[in-house]
Image 1 (cartoon, rainbow, N blue to C red):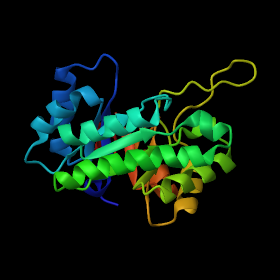
Image 2: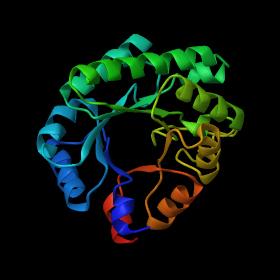
Image 3: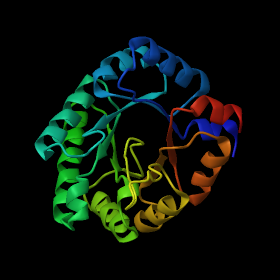
Amino acid sequence: MTKEAVAKMIDHTQLSAVATRADIEKLCAEAKTHGFASVCVNPVYVPFAASLLSGSEVKVCTVIGFPLGADATEDKAAQAANSVEKGADEVDMVIDIGAAKEGRFDDVERDIFYVVQAAHTVGKSMHKNPVVKVILETCYLTDEEIVRTSKCAKIAGADFVKTSTGFATPKDADGKSLPNGASVHAVKLMRETVGDSMGVKASGGIRSAQTAREMIEAGASRLGTSSGVSIVEGW
């Protein structure tokens, strides 16, 4: 795989709570220089990023219900619709993780469905087709829950399943912190579940060309990372 092909798989990400307009300007400039798939920014920066990337092939991605997934469905749907209206081409939503842990997969599917519908309805009115990615937050889920939530995303009409926010704080029984990002195992499981009809985005902890390669080989078709520049330069 060429360096250019890898670049087109990267969502160049800046989701820090203290991100400034200068940070977003830098992010967008790097994305244009390297030909990344998108920049992923918090909703407040969607209009600004869209203005900076106007006329380029780089898409604007934002996050919905981030990072906990615990917003009411109607709030997630409204945020998705507003973000698309303001210039987002792609939205990455976090599932209702608590519902998944309780086995309420009908509620998980419903939550995703309404976000997908909201994004697509506004997109259609603007003559564009926004992409919806569904963040499972796999570090909190069992293998069975990863399979079930991936199926929910597929049935609900989403375009991608995504591993992680990178902001989760899983701990073991002794209170020791556990990994919170993408894993090869989770990516393989998600790809096996959704098949070739959906994208799989690996996100969280992808900081090197070697890790990026492992995720792609496991089945990832998109990579969410704040290390896009060093990844393509090291490819």
